[in-house]
Amino acid sequence: MSEVRAIVEGACPGAVVEAIEHRGELTLGIRADRLLEVARFAAAAPLAFALLSDLTCADFPELPGRFRVAYHLFSIEDGSRLRLRAWAGADSPELPSVVEVWPTANWHEREVYDMFGVHFRNHPDLCRILMPLDWEGHPLRRDYPLGGEEVEFTDAV
Amino acid sequence: MTTGDRTGGIPVREEAHSAREAAEREGRELTETERAIAGAESFSPQEALARTELAEGQDLEPGFREPMIINLGPQHPSTHGVLRLVTQLDGEVVRDLHPVIGYLHTGIEKQCENKTYWQAITLVTRMDYLASFFNIHAYTMAVERLLDLPVPPRAQYLRVILSELNRVASHLVWLGTSGLELGAITVFFYTFREREQALDLFEMIAGDRMNTRFFQVGGCAEDMPPGFEARLRAFIEAMPARLDEYEELLSENPIWLQRTRGVGILPPDELVGLGVTGPALRAAGVDLDLRKAAPYSSYERFDFSVPLGARGDAYDRYIVRVRETRESLRIIEQALDGMPEGSHIADDRKVVLPPREELASSMEALIHHFKLVTEGFVVPAGETYTAVESPRGELGCYLVSDGGPKPHRCHIRDPSFVNLQALRPMARGGYLADLIAMIGSLDNVMGGVDR
Image (cartoon, rainbow over all chains, first blue to last red; front, side, top):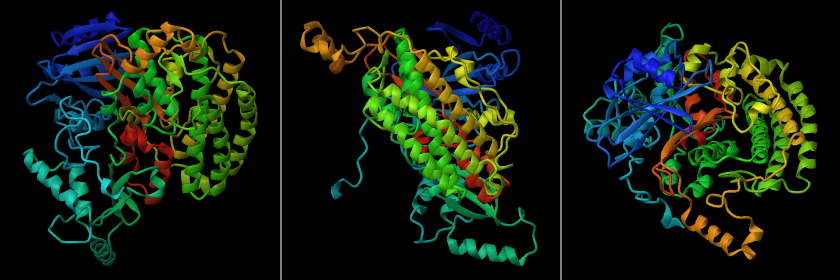
Protein backbone atom coordinates (compact mmCIF):
# COMPACT_ATOMS: atom_id res chain seq x y z
CA MET A 1 0.00 0.00 0.00
CA SER A 2 2.84 2.34 0.84
CA GLU A 3 4.23 1.40 -2.58
CA VAL A 4 1.32 3.16 -4.26
CA ARG A 5 1.99 6.19 -2.12
CA ALA A 6 5.68 6.16 -3.04
CA ILE A 7 4.88 5.82 -6.75
CA VAL A 8 2.50 8.78 -6.66
CA GLU A 9 4.90 10.88 -4.63
CA GLY A 10 7.73 9.99 -6.97
CA ALA A 11 5.81 10.97 -10.08
CA CYS A 12 4.18 14.11 -8.68
CA PRO A 13 6.55 15.46 -6.04
CA GLY A 14 4.90 17.81 -3.57
CA ALA A 15 1.34 16.99 -4.66
CA VAL A 16 0.59 14.58 -1.83
CA VAL A 17 -0.05 16.49 1.39
CA GLU A 18 -1.19 13.58 3.54
CA ALA A 19 -1.38 9.82 3.38
CA ILE A 20 -3.68 7.84 5.64
CA GLU A 21 -4.00 4.11 6.02
CA HIS A 22 -7.16 3.24 7.87
CA ARG A 23 -9.01 -0.08 8.00
CA GLY A 24 -7.00 -1.37 5.06
CA GLU A 25 -7.80 1.57 2.79
CA LEU A 26 -5.24 4.01 1.47
CA THR A 27 -6.18 7.67 1.23
CA LEU A 28 -3.98 10.28 -0.39
CA GLY A 29 -4.71 13.94 0.26
CA ILE A 30 -3.85 15.91 -2.87
CA ARG A 31 -3.25 19.65 -3.23
CA ALA A 32 -6.17 21.09 -5.18
CA ASP A 33 -3.96 22.73 -7.82
CA ARG A 34 -2.16 19.45 -8.52
CA LEU A 35 -5.24 17.24 -8.59
CA LEU A 36 -5.54 16.93 -12.35
CA GLU A 37 -1.89 16.01 -12.70
CA VAL A 38 -2.23 13.23 -10.10
CA ALA A 39 -5.49 12.03 -11.67
CA ARG A 40 -3.85 11.73 -15.09
CA PHE A 41 -0.96 9.84 -13.59
CA ALA A 42 -3.13 7.45 -11.57
CA ALA A 43 -5.36 6.59 -14.54
CA ALA A 44 -2.45 5.54 -16.77
CA ALA A 45 0.18 2.83 -16.34
CA PRO A 46 1.82 1.81 -14.00
CA LEU A 47 -1.03 2.35 -11.50
CA ALA A 48 -3.77 1.88 -14.12
CA PHE A 49 -6.75 2.96 -12.07
CA ALA A 50 -8.90 2.92 -15.18
CA LEU A 51 -12.21 2.96 -13.37
CA LEU A 52 -13.37 5.90 -11.30
CA SER A 53 -15.83 4.10 -9.04
CA ASP A 54 -17.18 7.08 -7.28
CA LEU A 55 -16.70 10.77 -6.78
CA THR A 56 -18.41 12.53 -3.93
CA CYS A 57 -18.06 15.22 -1.35
CA ALA A 58 -18.38 15.69 2.39
CA ASP A 59 -19.02 19.02 4.10
CA PHE A 60 -17.04 20.10 7.18
CA PRO A 61 -18.26 23.64 7.92
CA GLU A 62 -15.88 24.04 10.87
CA LEU A 63 -12.74 23.31 8.86
CA PRO A 64 -10.97 25.89 6.66
CA GLY A 65 -11.16 23.84 3.44
CA ARG A 66 -14.81 22.94 4.18
CA PHE A 67 -15.67 20.76 1.14
CA ARG A 68 -13.66 17.57 0.91
CA VAL A 69 -14.10 15.82 -2.41
CA ALA A 70 -13.20 12.12 -2.51
CA TYR A 71 -12.27 10.17 -5.65
CA HIS A 72 -12.53 6.40 -5.40
CA LEU A 73 -10.33 4.70 -7.93
CA PHE A 74 -10.45 1.04 -8.82
CA SER A 75 -7.97 -1.04 -10.75
CA ILE A 76 -9.57 -3.66 -12.96
CA GLU A 77 -6.25 -5.48 -13.25
CA ASP A 78 -5.69 -6.33 -9.58
CA GLY A 79 -8.86 -5.20 -7.85
CA SER A 80 -7.10 -2.66 -5.65
CA ARG A 81 -8.57 0.64 -4.58
CA LEU A 82 -7.20 4.08 -3.91
CA ARG A 83 -8.91 7.14 -2.52
CA LEU A 84 -7.79 10.61 -3.49
CA ARG A 85 -9.03 13.58 -1.52
CA ALA A 86 -8.87 17.28 -2.14
CA TRP A 87 -10.25 20.28 -0.31
CA ALA A 88 -12.31 22.67 -2.44
CA GLY A 89 -12.26 25.68 -0.12
CA ALA A 90 -14.97 27.37 1.88
CA ASP A 91 -15.80 30.67 0.16
CA SER A 92 -15.97 29.87 -3.53
CA PRO A 93 -15.34 26.11 -3.58
CA GLU A 94 -13.63 25.07 -6.77
CA LEU A 95 -11.63 22.12 -8.09
CA PRO A 96 -10.42 21.12 -11.54
CA SER A 97 -12.75 18.74 -13.34
CA VAL A 98 -11.46 15.23 -13.99
CA VAL A 99 -13.93 14.53 -16.83
CA GLU A 100 -11.09 14.51 -19.36
CA VAL A 101 -9.42 11.68 -17.40
CA TRP A 102 -12.52 9.67 -16.49
CA PRO A 103 -15.63 10.61 -18.52
CA THR A 104 -17.80 9.03 -15.82
CA ALA A 105 -16.96 11.99 -13.57
CA ASN A 106 -19.37 14.10 -15.63
CA TRP A 107 -22.51 13.21 -13.70
CA HIS A 108 -20.73 12.72 -10.39
CA GLU A 109 -19.35 16.26 -10.57
CA ARG A 110 -22.75 17.58 -11.57
CA GLU A 111 -24.20 15.87 -8.51
CA VAL A 112 -21.55 17.36 -6.23
CA TYR A 113 -22.19 20.78 -7.78
CA ASP A 114 -25.91 20.33 -7.31
CA MET A 115 -25.73 19.09 -3.73
CA PHE A 116 -22.73 21.05 -2.37
CA GLY A 117 -22.17 23.95 -4.75
CA VAL A 118 -18.62 22.94 -5.54
CA HIS A 119 -17.60 24.35 -8.90
CA PHE A 120 -15.56 22.15 -11.24
CA ARG A 121 -13.30 24.09 -13.57
CA ASN A 122 -13.51 23.10 -17.26
CA HIS A 123 -16.46 20.78 -16.75
CA PRO A 124 -18.25 20.46 -20.11
CA ASP A 125 -21.80 20.69 -18.75
CA LEU A 126 -21.90 21.84 -15.14
CA CYS A 127 -25.55 22.25 -14.19
CA ARG A 128 -27.94 20.75 -11.67
CA ILE A 129 -28.78 17.11 -12.09
CA LEU A 130 -31.11 15.85 -9.36
CA MET A 131 -32.73 19.07 -8.14
CA PRO A 132 -34.85 21.23 -10.47
CA LEU A 133 -32.76 23.60 -12.61
CA ASP A 134 -34.06 26.67 -10.78
CA TRP A 135 -33.42 25.36 -7.27
CA GLU A 136 -31.80 27.72 -4.81
CA GLY A 137 -29.24 26.44 -2.34
CA HIS A 138 -27.35 23.19 -2.09
CA PRO A 139 -29.22 20.57 -0.07
CA LEU A 140 -26.40 18.36 1.21
CA ARG A 141 -24.52 21.21 2.85
CA ARG A 142 -24.55 20.76 6.60
CA ASP A 143 -26.16 24.16 7.14
CA TYR A 144 -29.06 23.39 4.78
CA PRO A 145 -31.99 22.51 7.04
CA LEU A 146 -33.65 19.13 6.91
CA GLY A 147 -37.38 19.41 6.45
CA GLY A 148 -37.08 23.07 5.52
CA GLU A 149 -39.06 22.36 2.40
CA GLU A 150 -42.80 22.94 2.35
CA VAL A 151 -44.75 19.77 1.63
CA GLU A 152 -47.02 20.18 -1.34
CA PHE A 153 -50.65 19.07 -1.57
CA THR A 154 -51.17 18.77 2.21
CA ASP A 155 -54.39 20.79 2.01
CA ALA A 156 -56.04 17.99 0.06
CA VAL A 157 -55.58 15.48 2.89
CA MET B 1 -34.44 25.29 -31.54
CA THR B 2 -36.47 28.32 -30.64
CA THR B 3 -36.46 29.93 -27.25
CA GLY B 4 -38.75 32.87 -28.04
CA ASP B 5 -41.57 33.99 -25.78
CA ARG B 6 -44.88 32.30 -26.28
CA THR B 7 -47.78 31.96 -23.94
CA GLY B 8 -49.77 28.94 -22.86
CA GLY B 9 -49.58 25.39 -24.03
CA ILE B 10 -46.76 23.75 -22.21
CA PRO B 11 -46.79 23.68 -18.40
CA VAL B 12 -43.08 22.93 -18.09
CA ARG B 13 -42.09 26.15 -19.88
CA GLU B 14 -41.72 27.89 -16.54
CA GLU B 15 -38.88 25.63 -15.56
CA ALA B 16 -36.97 26.58 -18.67
CA HIS B 17 -37.57 30.23 -17.94
CA SER B 18 -36.39 29.97 -14.37
CA ALA B 19 -33.35 27.96 -15.45
CA ARG B 20 -32.32 30.94 -17.52
CA GLU B 21 -32.92 33.21 -14.56
CA ALA B 22 -30.87 30.94 -12.28
CA ALA B 23 -27.98 30.92 -14.76
CA GLU B 24 -28.12 34.72 -14.98
CA ARG B 25 -28.05 34.89 -11.19
CA GLU B 26 -24.87 32.86 -11.15
CA GLY B 27 -23.46 34.95 -13.97
CA ARG B 28 -22.95 32.17 -16.49
CA GLU B 29 -24.29 30.91 -19.78
CA LEU B 30 -26.76 28.04 -20.00
CA THR B 31 -24.95 24.71 -20.18
CA GLU B 32 -25.58 22.12 -22.86
CA THR B 33 -28.13 20.15 -20.86
CA GLU B 34 -29.92 23.28 -19.70
CA ARG B 35 -30.14 24.51 -23.29
CA ALA B 36 -31.54 21.16 -24.39
CA ILE B 37 -34.18 21.21 -21.67
CA ALA B 38 -35.05 24.84 -22.32
CA GLY B 39 -35.22 24.13 -26.05
CA ALA B 40 -37.50 21.17 -25.54
CA GLU B 41 -39.87 23.19 -23.46
CA SER B 42 -40.30 26.00 -25.91
CA PHE B 43 -41.06 23.70 -28.80
CA SER B 44 -44.73 22.98 -29.37
CA PRO B 45 -46.12 19.94 -31.19
CA GLN B 46 -47.39 22.27 -33.91
CA GLU B 47 -43.91 23.61 -34.48
CA ALA B 48 -42.51 20.12 -34.57
CA LEU B 49 -45.05 19.13 -37.19
CA ALA B 50 -44.34 22.22 -39.27
CA ARG B 51 -40.65 21.40 -39.27
CA THR B 52 -41.23 17.85 -40.34
CA GLU B 53 -43.37 19.00 -43.23
CA LEU B 54 -40.73 21.51 -44.22
CA ALA B 55 -38.07 18.82 -44.12
CA GLU B 56 -40.12 16.53 -46.32
CA GLY B 57 -40.27 19.21 -49.00
CA GLN B 58 -36.51 19.43 -49.12
CA ASP B 59 -34.60 16.50 -50.44
CA LEU B 60 -32.18 15.97 -47.58
CA GLU B 61 -30.70 12.76 -46.29
CA PRO B 62 -31.74 11.61 -42.81
CA GLY B 63 -29.30 12.98 -40.26
CA PHE B 64 -28.93 16.34 -42.02
CA ARG B 65 -32.35 17.79 -41.50
CA GLU B 66 -33.50 20.17 -38.80
CA PRO B 67 -34.13 18.02 -35.72
CA MET B 68 -37.49 17.51 -34.09
CA ILE B 69 -37.34 17.64 -30.31
CA ILE B 70 -39.40 15.10 -28.44
CA ASN B 71 -39.75 14.65 -24.71
CA LEU B 72 -39.71 10.95 -23.97
CA GLY B 73 -41.07 10.65 -20.47
CA PRO B 74 -40.88 11.39 -17.57
CA GLN B 75 -43.90 9.13 -17.47
CA HIS B 76 -43.34 6.56 -20.12
CA PRO B 77 -43.93 2.84 -19.65
CA SER B 78 -40.57 1.82 -21.08
CA THR B 79 -38.35 4.01 -18.94
CA HIS B 80 -38.50 1.74 -15.87
CA GLY B 81 -39.57 4.56 -13.60
CA VAL B 82 -39.62 8.27 -14.15
CA LEU B 83 -36.86 9.00 -16.60
CA ARG B 84 -37.17 11.85 -19.05
CA LEU B 85 -35.19 11.89 -22.26
CA VAL B 86 -35.04 15.07 -24.31
CA THR B 87 -34.39 13.56 -27.71
CA GLN B 88 -33.49 15.34 -30.91
CA LEU B 89 -34.95 13.27 -33.68
CA ASP B 90 -34.41 13.32 -37.38
CA GLY B 91 -37.19 11.15 -38.64
CA GLU B 92 -36.61 7.98 -36.65
CA VAL B 93 -32.93 8.60 -36.07
CA VAL B 94 -31.82 9.87 -32.66
CA ARG B 95 -29.38 12.70 -33.27
CA ASP B 96 -28.83 13.55 -29.66
CA LEU B 97 -30.37 12.88 -26.31
CA HIS B 98 -30.23 14.40 -22.84
CA PRO B 99 -31.39 12.33 -19.89
CA VAL B 100 -33.18 14.42 -17.29
CA ILE B 101 -33.29 12.73 -13.91
CA GLY B 102 -34.20 13.60 -10.34
CA TYR B 103 -37.95 12.98 -10.46
CA LEU B 104 -37.61 10.35 -7.72
CA HIS B 105 -35.07 12.29 -5.69
CA THR B 106 -36.01 11.93 -2.05
CA GLY B 107 -32.87 13.15 -0.33
CA ILE B 108 -32.12 9.82 1.33
CA GLU B 109 -28.45 10.75 1.75
CA LYS B 110 -29.47 13.90 3.62
CA GLN B 111 -31.88 11.98 5.81
CA CYS B 112 -29.20 9.41 6.67
CA GLU B 113 -27.14 12.19 8.23
CA ASN B 114 -30.01 12.81 10.64
CA LYS B 115 -30.62 9.20 11.66
CA THR B 116 -28.55 6.93 13.85
CA TYR B 117 -26.54 4.25 12.08
CA TRP B 118 -29.06 1.49 12.66
CA GLN B 119 -32.03 3.67 11.68
CA ALA B 120 -30.41 4.60 8.37
CA ILE B 121 -30.62 0.96 7.23
CA THR B 122 -34.34 1.45 6.68
CA LEU B 123 -33.62 4.37 4.36
CA VAL B 124 -30.83 2.95 2.22
CA THR B 125 -32.96 -0.13 1.48
CA ARG B 126 -35.32 2.05 -0.49
CA MET B 127 -32.80 3.36 -3.01
CA ASP B 128 -32.58 0.58 -5.55
CA TYR B 129 -35.86 -1.03 -4.63
CA LEU B 130 -35.36 -4.11 -6.82
CA ALA B 131 -32.07 -4.92 -5.13
CA SER B 132 -32.70 -3.86 -1.56
CA PHE B 133 -30.48 -6.50 0.02
CA PHE B 134 -27.51 -5.12 -1.90
CA ASN B 135 -28.12 -1.59 -0.65
CA ILE B 136 -28.12 -2.71 2.97
CA HIS B 137 -25.20 -5.04 2.36
CA ALA B 138 -22.96 -2.23 1.10
CA TYR B 139 -24.10 0.04 3.93
CA THR B 140 -23.74 -2.46 6.79
CA MET B 141 -20.35 -3.54 5.45
CA ALA B 142 -19.21 0.08 5.62
CA VAL B 143 -20.40 0.47 9.22
CA GLU B 144 -18.83 -2.85 10.17
CA ARG B 145 -15.52 -1.86 8.65
CA LEU B 146 -15.46 1.44 10.54
CA LEU B 147 -16.34 -0.42 13.74
CA ASP B 148 -13.81 -3.14 12.89
CA LEU B 149 -16.53 -5.65 13.71
CA PRO B 150 -16.12 -9.16 12.30
CA VAL B 151 -19.25 -10.81 10.90
CA PRO B 152 -19.74 -14.49 11.87
CA PRO B 153 -19.40 -17.00 8.99
CA ARG B 154 -23.02 -18.09 9.27
CA ALA B 155 -24.20 -14.51 8.84
CA GLN B 156 -21.95 -14.13 5.81
CA TYR B 157 -23.45 -17.23 4.24
CA LEU B 158 -26.98 -16.05 4.98
CA ARG B 159 -26.12 -12.73 3.34
CA VAL B 160 -24.79 -14.54 0.29
CA ILE B 161 -27.95 -16.64 0.01
CA LEU B 162 -30.26 -13.65 0.23
CA SER B 163 -28.13 -11.51 -2.06
CA GLU B 164 -28.12 -14.17 -4.73
CA LEU B 165 -31.83 -14.81 -4.33
CA ASN B 166 -32.32 -11.07 -4.71
CA ARG B 167 -30.18 -11.11 -7.84
CA VAL B 168 -32.40 -13.83 -9.26
CA ALA B 169 -35.54 -11.83 -8.42
CA SER B 170 -34.08 -8.64 -9.90
CA HIS B 171 -33.01 -10.33 -13.12
CA LEU B 172 -36.48 -11.87 -13.40
CA VAL B 173 -38.08 -8.44 -13.22
CA TRP B 174 -35.60 -7.18 -15.79
CA LEU B 175 -36.24 -10.08 -18.15
CA GLY B 176 -40.01 -9.80 -17.84
CA THR B 177 -40.21 -6.05 -18.36
CA SER B 178 -37.63 -5.97 -21.15
CA GLY B 179 -39.53 -8.69 -22.95
CA LEU B 180 -42.75 -6.78 -22.45
CA GLU B 181 -41.31 -3.64 -24.02
CA LEU B 182 -40.20 -5.50 -27.11
CA GLY B 183 -43.51 -7.27 -27.49
CA ALA B 184 -42.78 -10.60 -25.81
CA ILE B 185 -45.61 -10.47 -23.31
CA THR B 186 -45.59 -14.15 -22.36
CA VAL B 187 -42.16 -13.93 -20.73
CA PHE B 188 -43.48 -11.30 -18.36
CA PHE B 189 -46.11 -13.64 -16.93
CA TYR B 190 -43.61 -16.45 -16.55
CA THR B 191 -40.88 -14.43 -14.85
CA PHE B 192 -43.26 -12.71 -12.46
CA ARG B 193 -44.67 -16.07 -11.45
CA GLU B 194 -41.20 -17.15 -10.33
CA ARG B 195 -40.31 -13.79 -8.86
CA GLU B 196 -43.36 -14.09 -6.66
CA GLN B 197 -41.90 -17.27 -5.17
CA ALA B 198 -38.63 -15.48 -4.48
CA LEU B 199 -40.55 -12.69 -2.74
CA ASP B 200 -42.43 -15.29 -0.71
CA LEU B 201 -39.08 -16.59 0.48
CA PHE B 202 -38.03 -13.05 1.47
CA GLU B 203 -41.27 -12.71 3.38
CA MET B 204 -40.68 -16.00 5.13
CA ILE B 205 -37.22 -15.09 6.40
CA ALA B 206 -37.41 -11.32 6.79
CA GLY B 207 -41.10 -10.53 7.20
CA ASP B 208 -41.18 -8.21 4.19
CA ARG B 209 -41.39 -8.94 0.51
CA MET B 210 -39.42 -5.90 -0.56
CA ASN B 211 -37.33 -3.30 1.26
CA THR B 212 -36.46 -5.59 4.13
CA ARG B 213 -33.99 -4.50 6.77
CA PHE B 214 -32.88 -8.04 7.34
CA PHE B 215 -29.13 -7.38 7.32
CA GLN B 216 -28.09 -5.69 10.54
CA VAL B 217 -24.78 -4.21 11.55
CA GLY B 218 -22.89 -7.33 12.64
CA GLY B 219 -24.89 -9.95 10.78
CA CYS B 220 -28.51 -10.82 10.02
CA ALA B 221 -31.61 -10.10 12.07
CA GLU B 222 -32.70 -13.73 12.38
CA ASP B 223 -31.57 -17.21 11.54
CA MET B 224 -33.39 -19.23 8.89
CA PRO B 225 -36.89 -20.12 10.11
CA PRO B 226 -37.94 -23.80 10.10
CA GLY B 227 -38.99 -24.92 6.65
CA PHE B 228 -37.12 -22.13 4.87
CA GLU B 229 -34.27 -24.30 3.67
CA ALA B 230 -36.57 -26.94 2.18
CA ARG B 231 -38.61 -24.31 0.38
CA LEU B 232 -35.52 -22.55 -0.93
CA ARG B 233 -34.08 -25.84 -2.16
CA ALA B 234 -37.30 -26.59 -3.98
CA PHE B 235 -37.10 -23.15 -5.61
CA ILE B 236 -33.51 -23.51 -6.81
CA GLU B 237 -34.25 -27.02 -8.06
CA ALA B 238 -37.19 -25.82 -10.13
CA MET B 239 -35.54 -22.68 -11.47
CA PRO B 240 -33.11 -24.08 -14.09
CA ALA B 241 -36.01 -25.66 -15.96
CA ARG B 242 -37.88 -22.36 -15.78
CA LEU B 243 -34.87 -20.53 -17.19
CA ASP B 244 -34.79 -23.04 -20.02
CA GLU B 245 -38.40 -22.13 -20.64
CA TYR B 246 -37.60 -18.41 -20.96
CA GLU B 247 -34.65 -19.14 -23.17
CA GLU B 248 -36.82 -21.28 -25.41
CA LEU B 249 -39.14 -18.33 -25.78
CA LEU B 250 -36.45 -15.76 -26.50
CA SER B 251 -32.97 -16.96 -27.37
CA GLU B 252 -33.83 -17.99 -30.92
CA ASN B 253 -36.92 -15.90 -31.33
CA PRO B 254 -36.44 -14.00 -34.63
CA ILE B 255 -38.18 -10.86 -33.37
CA TRP B 256 -36.16 -10.81 -30.15
CA LEU B 257 -32.97 -11.35 -32.14
CA GLN B 258 -33.76 -8.56 -34.58
CA ARG B 259 -34.61 -6.15 -31.81
CA THR B 260 -31.55 -6.84 -29.64
CA ARG B 261 -28.68 -7.96 -31.91
CA GLY B 262 -26.26 -5.15 -32.67
CA VAL B 263 -28.17 -2.67 -30.50
CA GLY B 264 -26.42 -0.39 -28.01
CA ILE B 265 -22.81 -1.36 -28.65
CA LEU B 266 -19.99 0.69 -27.15
CA PRO B 267 -16.31 -0.31 -27.16
CA PRO B 268 -15.14 -1.84 -23.83
CA ASP B 269 -12.64 0.91 -23.01
CA GLU B 270 -15.31 3.55 -23.51
CA LEU B 271 -17.62 1.65 -21.18
CA VAL B 272 -14.91 1.53 -18.50
CA GLY B 273 -14.26 5.23 -18.98
CA LEU B 274 -17.95 5.91 -18.48
CA GLY B 275 -17.85 3.89 -15.26
CA VAL B 276 -20.25 1.23 -16.53
CA THR B 277 -20.13 -1.93 -14.40
CA GLY B 278 -22.14 -5.12 -14.04
CA PRO B 279 -23.74 -7.18 -16.81
CA ALA B 280 -23.63 -4.22 -19.22
CA LEU B 281 -19.83 -4.21 -18.98
CA ARG B 282 -19.38 -7.98 -18.84
CA ALA B 283 -21.45 -8.36 -22.00
CA ALA B 284 -18.71 -6.41 -23.77
CA GLY B 285 -16.16 -8.98 -22.61
CA VAL B 286 -14.61 -7.15 -19.64
CA ASP B 287 -14.17 -9.60 -16.79
CA LEU B 288 -15.09 -7.43 -13.82
CA ASP B 289 -17.19 -8.91 -11.07
CA LEU B 290 -16.51 -7.65 -7.56
CA ARG B 291 -17.41 -11.06 -6.16
CA LYS B 292 -14.24 -12.31 -7.88
CA ALA B 293 -12.14 -9.13 -8.19
CA ALA B 294 -12.51 -7.99 -4.58
CA PRO B 295 -14.32 -10.78 -2.71
CA TYR B 296 -16.44 -9.88 0.31
CA SER B 297 -18.75 -11.86 2.58
CA SER B 298 -17.01 -15.21 1.90
CA TYR B 299 -17.57 -15.13 -1.89
CA GLU B 300 -14.06 -16.51 -2.33
CA ARG B 301 -15.32 -19.82 -0.92
CA PHE B 302 -17.86 -20.43 -3.66
CA ASP B 303 -17.32 -22.02 -7.00
CA PHE B 304 -19.03 -20.04 -9.74
CA SER B 305 -18.12 -18.60 -13.09
CA VAL B 306 -18.61 -15.09 -14.43
CA PRO B 307 -20.43 -15.19 -17.77
CA LEU B 308 -19.00 -12.86 -20.39
CA GLY B 309 -20.33 -11.65 -23.71
CA ALA B 310 -18.43 -10.91 -26.90
CA ARG B 311 -20.16 -8.17 -28.85
CA GLY B 312 -21.61 -6.12 -26.03
CA ASP B 313 -25.02 -5.59 -27.61
CA ALA B 314 -28.40 -5.88 -25.93
CA TYR B 315 -28.60 -9.56 -26.85
CA ASP B 316 -25.31 -10.31 -25.08
CA ARG B 317 -26.56 -8.50 -21.99
CA TYR B 318 -29.62 -10.71 -22.06
CA ILE B 319 -27.50 -13.86 -22.33
CA VAL B 320 -25.12 -12.69 -19.59
CA ARG B 321 -27.99 -12.01 -17.20
CA VAL B 322 -29.69 -15.34 -17.81
CA ARG B 323 -26.44 -17.23 -17.30
CA GLU B 324 -25.71 -15.17 -14.22
CA THR B 325 -29.04 -16.23 -12.78
CA ARG B 326 -28.01 -19.86 -13.20
CA GLU B 327 -24.71 -19.15 -11.41
CA SER B 328 -26.62 -17.47 -8.57
CA LEU B 329 -28.65 -20.65 -8.11
CA ARG B 330 -25.42 -22.63 -7.90
CA ILE B 331 -24.06 -20.28 -5.25
CA ILE B 332 -27.24 -20.58 -3.18
CA GLU B 333 -27.01 -24.36 -3.29
CA GLN B 334 -23.36 -24.32 -2.20
CA ALA B 335 -24.16 -21.91 0.61
CA LEU B 336 -26.97 -24.13 1.88
CA ASP B 337 -24.78 -27.24 1.70
CA GLY B 338 -21.85 -25.62 3.46
CA MET B 339 -23.78 -23.49 5.94
CA PRO B 340 -21.47 -23.00 8.94
CA GLU B 341 -22.70 -23.50 12.48
CA GLY B 342 -22.74 -20.62 14.90
CA SER B 343 -24.56 -17.39 15.44
CA HIS B 344 -26.33 -15.38 12.76
CA ILE B 345 -25.11 -12.12 14.26
CA ALA B 346 -21.98 -10.87 16.03
CA ASP B 347 -21.91 -11.03 19.80
CA ASP B 348 -21.05 -7.43 20.57
CA ARG B 349 -23.56 -6.00 23.01
CA LYS B 350 -22.41 -2.43 22.35
CA VAL B 351 -23.61 -2.63 18.76
CA VAL B 352 -25.95 -5.58 18.36
CA LEU B 353 -29.38 -5.82 19.99
CA PRO B 354 -29.52 -8.51 22.69
CA PRO B 355 -31.54 -11.66 21.95
CA ARG B 356 -35.24 -11.13 22.51
CA GLU B 357 -35.62 -13.86 25.15
CA GLU B 358 -32.99 -12.26 27.39
CA LEU B 359 -35.00 -9.08 27.78
CA ALA B 360 -37.43 -10.74 30.17
CA SER B 361 -34.74 -12.07 32.51
CA SER B 362 -31.62 -9.94 32.26
CA MET B 363 -31.49 -6.35 33.49
CA GLU B 364 -28.22 -5.79 31.65
CA ALA B 365 -29.72 -6.93 28.34
CA LEU B 366 -32.64 -4.57 28.89
CA ILE B 367 -30.28 -1.64 29.48
CA HIS B 368 -28.28 -2.47 26.36
CA HIS B 369 -31.47 -2.72 24.35
CA PHE B 370 -32.72 0.60 25.65
CA LYS B 371 -29.42 2.38 25.01
CA LEU B 372 -29.09 0.99 21.50
CA VAL B 373 -32.62 1.87 20.49
CA THR B 374 -32.69 5.36 21.98
CA GLU B 375 -29.13 6.56 21.44
CA GLY B 376 -27.73 4.22 18.85
CA PHE B 377 -24.08 3.24 18.93
CA VAL B 378 -20.99 5.32 18.36
CA VAL B 379 -18.77 4.66 15.36
CA PRO B 380 -15.09 5.67 15.52
CA ALA B 381 -14.13 8.60 13.31
CA GLY B 382 -12.90 7.74 9.85
CA GLU B 383 -14.10 7.07 6.36
CA THR B 384 -14.57 4.00 4.24
CA TYR B 385 -15.82 2.89 0.85
CA THR B 386 -17.26 -0.59 0.54
CA ALA B 387 -18.75 -2.06 -2.59
CA VAL B 388 -20.83 -5.08 -3.53
CA GLU B 389 -21.73 -6.53 -6.90
CA SER B 390 -25.39 -5.70 -7.33
CA PRO B 391 -27.47 -7.02 -10.26
CA ARG B 392 -26.64 -3.76 -12.05
CA GLY B 393 -22.96 -3.41 -11.17
CA GLU B 394 -20.84 -1.90 -8.45
CA LEU B 395 -22.97 -0.63 -5.60
CA GLY B 396 -20.75 1.22 -3.18
CA CYS B 397 -21.22 3.03 0.08
CA TYR B 398 -18.98 5.91 1.13
CA LEU B 399 -19.39 6.49 4.82
CA VAL B 400 -17.75 9.27 6.83
CA SER B 401 -17.98 9.13 10.59
CA ASP B 402 -17.14 11.99 12.94
CA GLY B 403 -17.19 9.72 15.98
CA GLY B 404 -20.85 10.29 16.78
CA PRO B 405 -23.94 8.09 16.62
CA LYS B 406 -25.05 9.46 13.23
CA PRO B 407 -23.20 9.29 9.89
CA HIS B 408 -21.48 12.55 8.98
CA ARG B 409 -21.91 11.65 5.34
CA CYS B 410 -23.44 8.61 3.71
CA HIS B 411 -23.19 8.39 -0.04
CA ILE B 412 -24.33 5.49 -2.16
CA ARG B 413 -22.67 4.96 -5.51
CA ASP B 414 -25.53 3.46 -7.40
CA PRO B 415 -24.72 1.56 -10.59
CA SER B 416 -27.98 2.66 -12.23
CA PHE B 417 -26.96 6.32 -11.92
CA VAL B 418 -23.55 5.73 -13.44
CA ASN B 419 -24.64 3.30 -16.16
CA LEU B 420 -27.33 5.67 -17.37
CA GLN B 421 -24.60 8.03 -18.56
CA ALA B 422 -23.73 5.51 -21.25
CA LEU B 423 -27.17 5.85 -22.82
CA ARG B 424 -26.34 9.05 -24.67
CA PRO B 425 -23.26 7.84 -26.59
CA MET B 426 -25.08 4.54 -27.16
CA ALA B 427 -28.23 6.05 -28.61
CA ARG B 428 -26.69 8.68 -30.86
CA GLY B 429 -27.20 7.76 -34.47
CA GLY B 430 -29.46 4.83 -33.65
CA TYR B 431 -33.17 4.42 -34.16
CA LEU B 432 -35.76 5.60 -31.68
CA ALA B 433 -37.19 2.10 -31.43
CA ASP B 434 -33.74 0.78 -30.51
CA LEU B 435 -33.50 3.38 -27.78
CA ILE B 436 -36.21 1.47 -25.91
CA ALA B 437 -34.22 -1.74 -26.24
CA MET B 438 -31.12 0.08 -24.97
CA ILE B 439 -32.86 1.48 -21.89
CA GLY B 440 -34.14 -2.00 -21.17
CA SER B 441 -30.76 -3.62 -21.65
CA LEU B 442 -29.03 -1.21 -19.25
CA ASP B 443 -31.54 -2.17 -16.55
CA ASN B 444 -31.64 1.14 -14.68
CA VAL B 445 -33.79 1.40 -11.61
CA MET B 446 -34.81 5.00 -11.19
CA GLY B 447 -35.05 4.73 -7.41
CA GLY B 448 -31.33 4.07 -7.46
CA VAL B 449 -30.57 6.74 -10.03
CA ASP B 450 -32.28 9.52 -8.10
CA ARG B 451 -31.89 8.31 -4.52
